[in-house]
Length: 357
Image 1 (tube, rainbow, N blue to C red):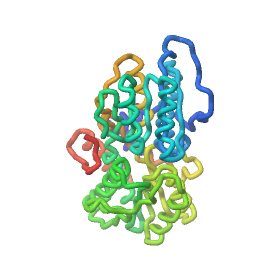
Image 2: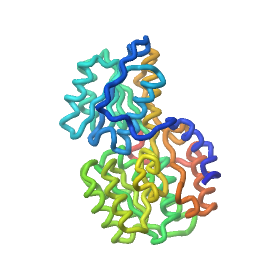
Image 3: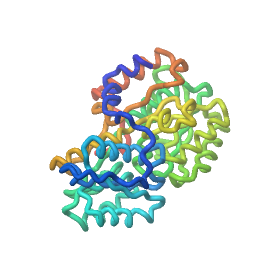
């Protein structure tokens, strides 16, 4: 995998990854109260459902917040959401703390974020995975994950022994289906390159219909959905469902011959109990985007211009093959590296109806 990671796009992604990221500090820990001038800036965060220990996008965002506390000396506060009914009161609690910048993590918080941003026009907000809010005090942090998922789909098809791979989502929202679109296209490109006929279960890009568990919390749904795919012959599965994906990993472990592609973070590092199952991960550098947004706001340079993470700017990427290094041929690794460079340069354009604009 070393040659593969040497591609310009993935080196950039690795360089932007947060150093020392791991399991987040427990959210009930008391935030630091440094009295230096920098600490007068209060950065706050509200999680999506699942909280900050979801091994996925909430955790990545929280790591960015903690890094800002450590490296920039800002004060921080946060509120965890366990369900959608928590969004409004959690955001209101942040405003009661007089946060200078409040970051909401996830598409599902768009309505509550817009409500609060309209009510508090002099307060700065940023939201991960949504660019539907057009207000001067709201900055979208969005990611063209179709780029990286394309590479994940290519690797899935190359690794598959059964000729069947699968993907499913938590809910049919743009930040989920964009992964699934890229995955399908990557499989199709592998089939074209190698005259293969690998089939994708769980998602039809043309009709935008497929398999969803209906939430991001119930791991048993992920386990049952994955078992169904395995029963149909799939030996690589990409869950795009936050903690529900842990159920998919449990089903793969039980089957014994199924690989998982994780999303958002590098599952090999964030979900260590299943690390030997991860072929790769389709990553979004959410933590880096959160850190950079806090840094800009602290310096007085807040802008509502969207941040769009791509392969070209290192905002998305794929993880190393880790324990699967020897399971993928050098020819395939070289092709994936070239595809990454082509996508980053614009020579190859991956598209999804859910791509951020």
